[in-house]
Amino acid sequence: MVSEAPPFWWTKADWRAYGLWPFSWVYGRISGSRMDHARRASVPVPVICVGNFTVGGAGKTPTAIALARAARKKGLNPGFLSRGYGGSLDVTTVVDAGHHRARDVGDEPLLLAREGMAVVCRKRIEGARRLVAEGADIIIMDDGFQSARLVFDFSLLVIDSRRGIGNGFMIPSGPVRAPIGQQLRHASALLKIGNGDRADVLVRRAARAGKPIHAADIVHLDDGGLKDVPVLAWAGIADPEKFFRTVRETGAVLAETRSFPDHHHFSTDEIADLLDLAAAKGYRMVTTAKDMVRLEPGHGRAGELMEKSRIIAVDVRFDDPAVPAKIIDAAVNAARMRSLRKDRA
Image 1 (cartoon, rainbow, N blue to C red):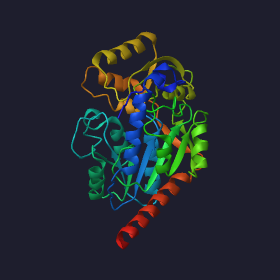
Image 2 (cartoon, rainbow, N blue to C red):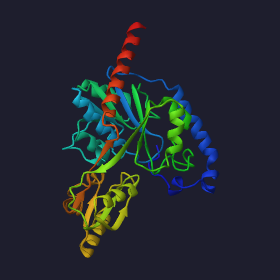
Image 3 (cartoon, one colour):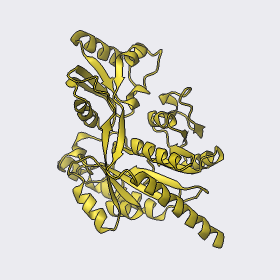
Image 4 (tube, one colour):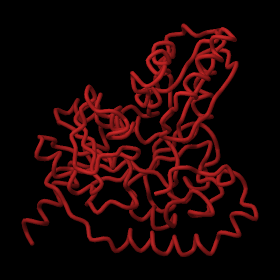
């Protein structure tokens, strides 16, 4: 799966998008067919997939964390399932946040492992079975909606209201992962994050298709200590501008920004440049939790960058606080019905 989205994917379609359209048509035929005709295996516990329509960050990981917290409140033991993008391990692995590095298991699984049991596996069905063996009684997948060969009991598609689906074209002309109609057909509900209007057309289409629409926002958890403080904000995520907006919302003065590719592993020179710029200008440094877990102590001045950078933590806040619990209930009920059908077969 493509991880880096060219800037033209997020603007009005131009000659580049139209020039690549024949390849997108082929890609769409293949990806759509795989979604419709995939032979999916099942596990004996509910499975929730948190996905998105496009390449790039829409808020899947914090949404998955919010659902896991709701599951725990119901007395369940949730387990996170991830492909481990950016990691090097090619065997099914239970993530140990105190032992593994981002280079081993990927950055997002490390964040998930701080919230609960997490497994990374290239083949998600094998990872799901490992989670069940480890005691998980509900599985929450971070991504994998278009490609997993696993039966979902609830599929929640997250969409960023400011980016929407970009130019609306499929890979490689645009960021869309599979034909929208087929994605909607396999979705249980949509979660619109933020108060922008770029997702409105798709939300209306989903509503006409009878899909429940939920709303939420990404909120910062800063204590106000950065108010009026000039900062250097650095981030290697799919949508750095989203993070920079969050920094402004803390009241900090966004003096300088530095963007890197998603899942980027920082070189010694890049780390030194950030530290030297902040020291020369007297800036505080701020970053994301996802970026911080990719810094490996002992790698050049990485330890110094970790010490001098402040994480701007974020959370997903649902407009209706009862929604996460309702999604858990829906998945549990769907899994129960799936089990009954299997017993009768």
